[in-house]
Length: 255
Image 1 (cartoon, helix red, strand yellow):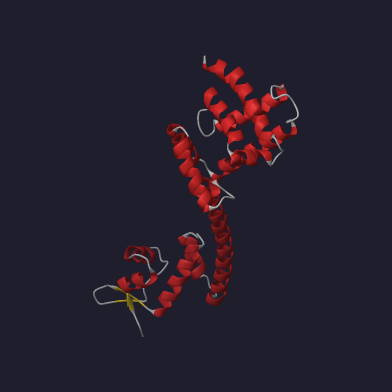
Image 2 (cartoon, rainbow, N blue to C red):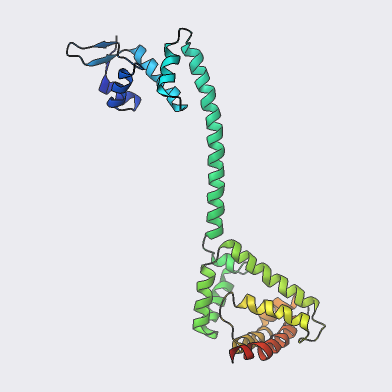
């Protein structure tokens, strides 16, 4: 018959020798025998009882209650194991649900805060176009504004970037609907206020910078094409409305 010392049993069960001493002390798991020197010796029956103890502990049952169950005359080990199995399966289902929830939350948080890639920033453009735009920005525009814009964009979450894109789309469409009005009309200027605020998400935009941006909309073929797709002539209309706003509002704010 195989016997186990307290150290060997502790190693097999993944618990400490001190825990086995405690189980012996409270009558939860007494060794089947002892050596002449008084050292504990455990038999296979003791291993099976310890297995039950550990299963019940996994279900957060108090040690005294575990002892009473195991010592009861009607205790059936097979029935108990089957019950343990059912309870552990139920716990696995709950834990898997929790793990799925955690994974979804991590994915959501990671997706929202992950640094935007060039492809996301220039969605719809080829890699060659992306590189050209970045190079032209460095060559044509104020280096400090370019650097500031890049810094701000790098700090945006994906949700913030999507919201910024949506605001650009909304303002352009709304201005296209009003493009037959006077660029100085209150309804038009209210939208230009939003457009200027959208620009300032990326960099500080003074009267001179805003006027220059308006000129870029009509002089640069790609900018013109971008706005004219909403309505032919929209780039010219925006340039005129932006100049009105720069002259009437931004200049006064700078004084």
